[in-house]
Image 1: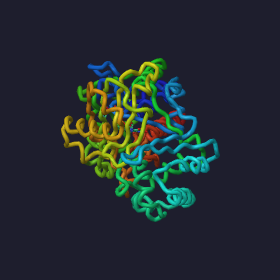
Image 2 (image 1 turned 90 degrees about the horizontal axis):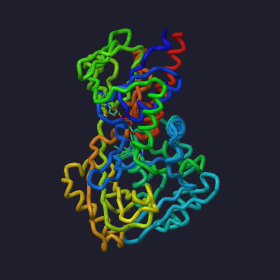
Image 3 (image 1 turned 45 degrees about the vertical axis):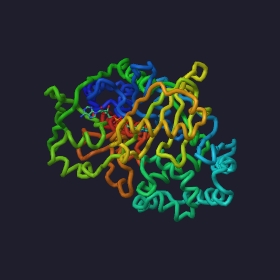
Image 4 (image 1 turned 60 degrees about the vertical axis):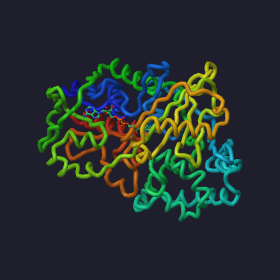
Length: 452
Ligand SMILES: Cc1cc2nc3c(=O)[nH]c(=O)nc-3n(C[C@H](O)[C@H](O)[C@H](O)COP(=O)(O)OP(=O)(O)OC[C@H]3O[C@@H](n4cnc5c(N)ncnc54)[C@H](O)[C@@H]3O)c2cc1C
């Protein structure tokens, strides 16, 4: 009887879809309820009406350490849509000193970094030597063994391991912003260490950068939706879950914005913490989910600029000493042979202080920065611009916030949690979302098999 039990998954972002795919693979019927008219949540794309180009709601990249994501994309058949580096290469441009590259050789980790850093001319040999030596200390500082590290900031940690002002300014700061969407003075050192350990210290393939060769919706939402539907799963779109109703034994039903009640044996919530809090009563929240009110958000702003001719030679580059951190040349990434003009996607992370700026002000700032860094752009015409403000891009991954993150299993046996903000131990990323979805689905499979 329980074979036929429908599982309700609330939220069709990466967490909900990865849980749905794993359950569908095991022939567990799922119903995914999604508030919007499109799946994918924060990691989805749309077609720009003026240019016809595919635009991601937020520019995303992945790294070789994203093992759960790799599994998920392989299962739905879209792993090949990633452009994967053979070895780590990172170009960082300085307005006066030009572009310096971290180009790693085919050596075992962490020695690949030694060669990678050797050509990075923004830093002195002494800075690089200290960076490499700090690897040993960072290796020993496992946040699982020293949980207090979550209470110190990345900046404090880096000073304690003798990182020079220049190595922080020209390397670590941009890395922190990119991976934690938070300034080093506020970002949690525990999450930073997790990134360093996962990506750089053990296996060189883990630090390779992966870029989607297509929009995010084509990359994974459409294939995941098809995978789930082909195995009997269903989707209810444009339907917001307004209320989760619990009694002492567990979740009783889910009430939607259309006033309908849905009953099922199990419910997985795969929505951000704020939305989950909005769907449960104060009494249940205060008694069983007291940390939900503690999360705050960090913004990311994406600025898209279309030019009539190519502007940059690299496919993506980090900008130092600039309010813009990264520039991706989407034309080169999507279809280098066809690229005539240039569609640039610019990223400002930890952007709370920029969200009050108007779209025109942000565009003017972005154009100024592009002209400052890329001489080719001084002779080309801007054709179109588009600004996307993601005010709640991720939860603010500041010092001391790990304790707010909730586990997959809750006090209620038929109610599980997923989402990038749950207690995966990872920064709020694609990998955290997919890992949380997989964890929830695996817990649920055990519960279903126990019921049989
Ligand atoms: C601009 C930007 C850039 C980023 N860059 C990167 C990057 O380069 N690399 C990386 O790894 N990560 C990046 N991230 C983070 C990554 O996108 C997220 O961690 C991931 O998408 C979170 O997935 P999720 O499923 O947990 O949540 P979401 O994507 O938020 O999905 C939740 C879903 O639930 C739905 N929902 C919400 N409330 C309800 C409700 N009441 N009823 C029904 N449905 C509901 C929402 O509509 C949404 O579809 C970026 C994020 C942003 C915003």
